[in-house]
Image: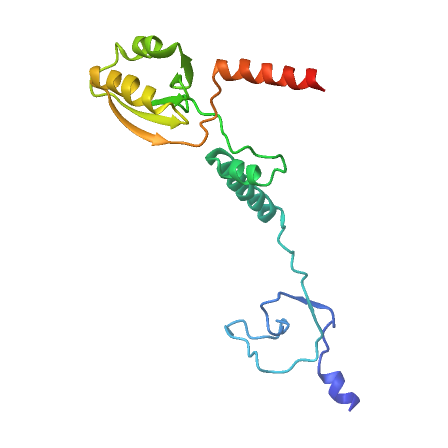
Length: 199
């Protein structure tokens, strides 16, 4: 058996191979130089040590991920989607009334008792209303809110005045318009003062 090992030349056990090589055979001086193919099925006595593969760096992937994340965040921020989300999450109490650019009483004439409000502003009786509507275009339309109005005052004074200036109107009954007449404020102050003095 020793003879067999002597006849067979043993190679260095630490032969370096590439990962793609299945086996390695030493091409020695006595090997046929014209041989173009190596028999890969033959077993060898060599131990294989494979080259260490270099792991690709993760930095390019991380950088691309961060760029995409920042791009999505910028899109959400500048499109206003992010602002809508953050407004919904606030704990501040929200009022039912929101600030609008126009007058919320635009196109509305409110009659409260004998007080007249033209687009949210109290006018000085029939004369004040006449001054407000005198120069309006014919065919302008208004909503006339009846808030505990004096029926005679409304039907015999205000509505005929609107008809005389060719202003279209629609009468609606409301419980409360949120408007307070100057006469109501003075009456309430007097009633409060009288109640305080009685105590």
